[in-house]
Length: 320
Image (cartoon, rainbow, N blue to C red; front, side):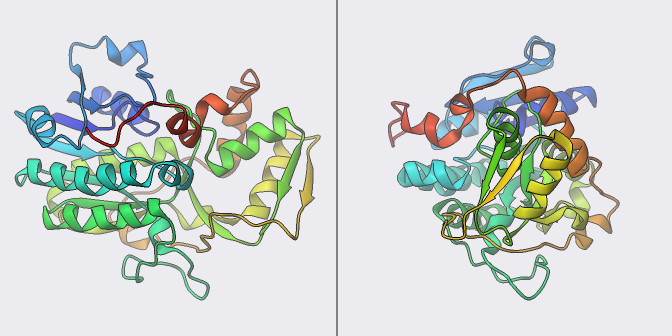
């Protein structure tokens, strides 16, 4: 197939694109390169790969990029609580209006949308299934939930993806596990508050595998919402800290009972709907921590790898 990937130069996209190329697909990436190109030479130089610098807020740009493509993977977004709070109007235009543009350009072709488990908000008494009412708490979660409506109307396969972690060519160190591993290595201390809050996690390579799975099963999964992750990967923040401490070593966990996390999500998620089709994750939390520890030892400063800081320091206009 010829596959268009919006946001393909980002954290998930730079992991997904090599997988698509390895499967023999032609890949076209549309990305505004807000965070740079981050394109590994092994696929940036492939004759089956094309990079188009453009913005999904520009309907003509997405329609042009989609021309001749057999399927679309929609990753393009302002991602994360911090980044969306830094520029909520940019988040709204990109995550909502941009998604509407992508949905219109799909014209019935297979379409996969990366939404987020953050849409569930706080669910204390049960595992979240795809039928659990959405209670998004942040600009990020609200705009992604709004994007789902346009995607489902266009027949997309919608993934509510667990909190990502792991190593990617476009590295992010503002993700909970990634940040904690970096702090454990370079600061030797993890300062924790609201440690009982639950999250669900997935390695970035398993996100990419789920998207490939959806493209391979496009007809069966069309117009459906699926939680993407594994019930084995539901953890509290304290459990994550203890795993990092056990694997990195020489790390203190300092509890701050008065601290307040601006990200108030608290939930665990069920993944039976997707696993019933034959998908499962492959990277455990322990394996992911080990890979991160190896990759982050030579990166003492994480500021250049955080979406919110990069948006705050950019000259990005609110118009495409």
